[in-house]
Length: 238
Image 1: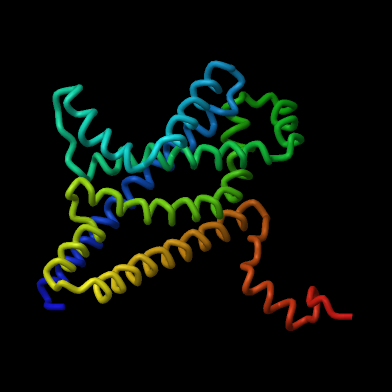
Image 2: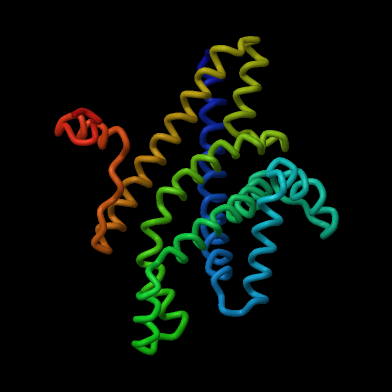
């Protein structure tokens, strides 16, 4: 490829990274707000949070992007730029999935911890901030890591709005070169590199957070297999 076409691809990578960061921040905020709301003592709060989760989990992210970009603006008399429309649609959609991660992690905290907070006369907000979240957040990191990778792959959907992300830029280059195999191989490699870096970052964050609460991170499968082969434990031999 020529330098001009490479510049187009790199611009697409930058747009994809921007969209990923912005939509991940929105999804994280939605995940915690809705996930915590699903554990609220008031039934109406739990119902509304559950309704949000079911609506956004039960709809297509692609259709949601169409709806936010083409349907929502005329109703209010304004138009969202593709970056913000994609951020809103992806953040709200993946935030619904993330809220289940938050709810599940909070539910997995030992009930004795909650009872200890009650015994110390902590308010519900104090119990959540000082007891529940510090123990639940480290357990959220592995599933959040998977969700972040899914969000990265979901950013390719914004190309339907004509947004110059990696997928859209790659298609323009493909049309210019009339060559699919080369350009899409490069694109696959770029997505893989970004996903690999995200995985390493999230793994480091998990270790740091678990160390803060006195826990050890779950060993990676390949490392555990090598350890078993070295020590002879778990090999299944007699």
